[in-house]
Length: 178
Image (tube, rainbow, N blue to C red; front, top):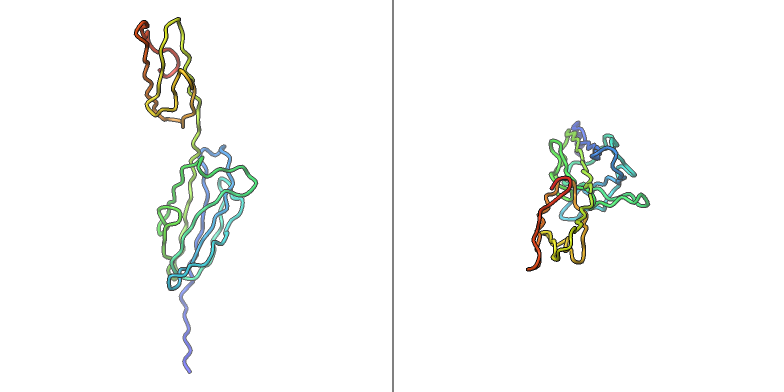
């Protein structure tokens, strides 16, 4: 009979959470899936539940193999994933959620999932004067005749076009940021 003894350390993974700005709402469940064995993948396992800004799973020991990580909005917290831009950083970590990465013997990786909250502001167009015409945004969100306001993410450039009718003249823009 043969006995095989391995002194190689099992790998660990730590997932840290950063939310920007730190005052933004958000609670997430941090999950891992794997290892992938002969094309079969185990289900998602929650490593950290209800994790907010500055939260961490701490080091979690796993078997060597191919894994995926992701986050989901914690139920009951009104967190909406589509309100965030998500990035993952860290040596040995996947570059995106649901992307395969490998944990090897003795490897200790620390992944940071950063969520940047997409702050939205309302842009409102108010027509002044007695002239007739429309104001439109290039993206189609504003069609003033009908809709004179739309929400945009912070830092987004919006192109507006004034379309006076044939008996009117466009006099210019007025207001902050115009």
